Length: 67
Image 1 (cartoon, rainbow, N blue to C red):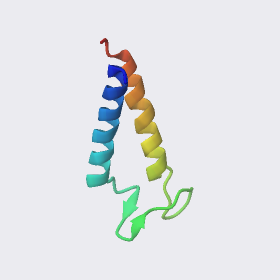
Image 2: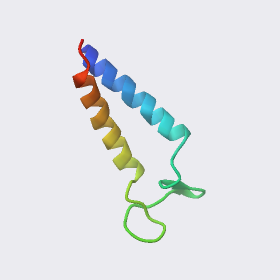
Image 3: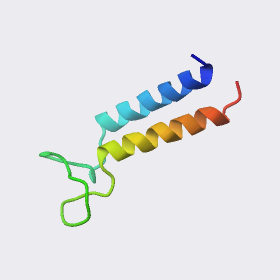
Image 4: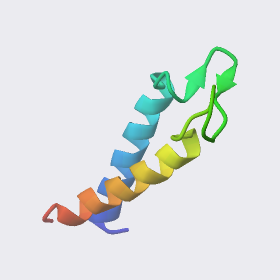
């Protein structure tokens, strides 16, 4: 595997680990994860969407690093 892919995977794993250890209040409550949607007791940023965004950002960051 290339070094860029290693950097992207490492960045992704670290960010997901931090997100799992310290989840934001708008995606998790005491009973579990808040459902996706618009309205009362729903969120626009579900956990799966945040994971996809983190994956894309970590890959883009690895592309801009010069190895």
